[in-house]
Amino acid sequence: MSKVYIYKGFERFWHWSQALLIMFLAITGFEVHGTFDIFGFEKAVAFHRTASWLLLGLIVISIFWHFTTGEWRQYIPTTKNLKEQLRYYLVDMFRGKKHPTKKTQLRKLNPLQRLVYLSFKLVLIPMTLISGIMYMLYKSFDENNIVIVEDYPLESIAFWHTLGAILLIVFLIVHVYMTTTGETPTSNIKAMVTGYEDLEEDTKSSDKNENENKEKVNPIKKVKK
Image (tube, rainbow, N blue to C red):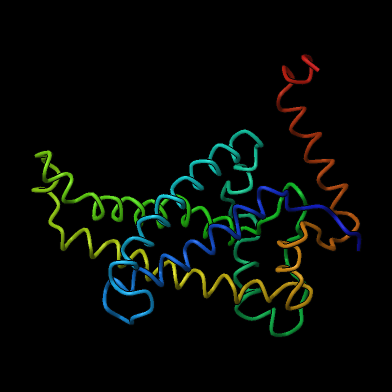
């Protein structure tokens, strides 16, 4: 095992900021629904709106970061070892068997994580954000006579936004549980805090081979160097 710098500074900032904002949005959102009383209705609405814009800004910046650093490739779905990974989480993990996929700097996510996180980014987050913005600006749309109000009833927008919020909470709970399935119960969380994780020695050579394969696939880039 060797200590590898696997999570970059912005990646960790984005991860924890997003997690905190989603939890804060869940608290203020359910208070607006009348589930409980912490800040009071008016403050909960104001806090929820502010946190929504902060999350939207963070997402825009993170999209730019993913595309400019090439980190978006981490989420490309694959069926290789997908069945083995699913079996590991359902059965093999409890029998003490080894993880079927090895984590490296270029392959941080296993096949199941790629599918789940890609769905999170392309379906769950957009559904919750778009419905939230439509709900938040519903009266503004109405004042400006924008047709969208008549096509999408407020009750329907609220339903999709609430459904998205509930699914985000479920995702958060499952995500936290899955972080405890690393080498030790806290190793994954510690890695996302410090950026460093203990990985098997041959993962470096795997990344090196993967980089070499990319160079072969893209000979033009190699000539420019």
